[in-house]
View 1 (cartoon, one colour):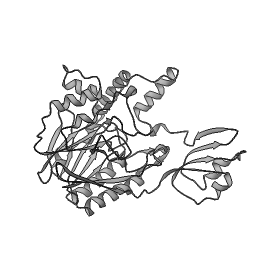
View 2 (cartoon, one colour):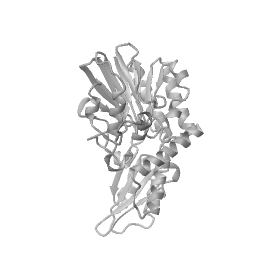
View 3 (tube, rainbow, N blue to C red):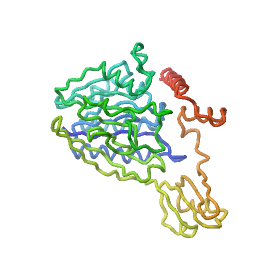
View 4 (tube, rainbow, N blue to C red):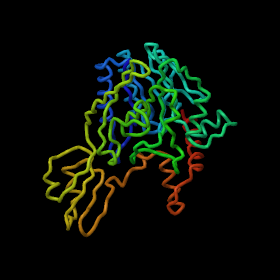
Length: 372
């Protein structure tokens, strides 16, 4: 049994003011071609399909095209919602989709959803992104204050046949995972979950962290995002993860490099060096090292680096940085990020507590469900 493990597509995401839809279209075509060339039995998408709870029409159309390609190739898919997704929108038309081999986690009802793999040799369990408040609604008598307590409660009420091979698809933060700036986490580390929680599963297909990695054991893996979504990811090597299971104890992995349409990187040098460099449409952080920077250096260097993300000056006298997109537009931020910014503005820079964020998340979720 062979499958492609994907996660954190973030379709519709903008990198500062730049739309990434064309780049995402390119890498999704690579993923589709790989699934067909490798003759994968199915594809797993472990959450954060979209970058916003209310994705644009263009983003939804792109994902629809990708799923249509899988269906035409008769490759089933198993999909969960992540913390950036609205579960109701991800599972819309789920009954119709299931008839075409697209299995999507629906609204959380207290238990994981289980499907038999296409060849019948394994169980695939779908568990969307969970917050403690989601689980408390279903189990009001349980003590659920942390994300780990939430997950343990759900798994305790979801029997697993240990005689079969079991694959869990989940979107959570596992303690010890390497993080970057483009991921959202709970204040105070309340979202940390121990890998021991997954003892009953032979393979855990994770989403949430953008760097491909394993946690605790080789069979608990983050696929990583297929594109670089911040400058903090510039040194990550993006890849597609192919998993082969010949049995419960016989699981192997291969990472196939993603051909990035445009890289995310930092360039450093004097004004003359940078101006004479080769033209590139990569997303770049420009660092100027001149002792006396030219007044119009940032504007002039746009001719070489049209997709400039940041402009910095670093020399023996000064060090400063300009966010080129001011200028980061409101459109590129999630409602929760906008609330956090507003809260800090009104409270002398203080961040909201996790309890306050939970209340706001619930309000946003209710609003999304009303609009759906």
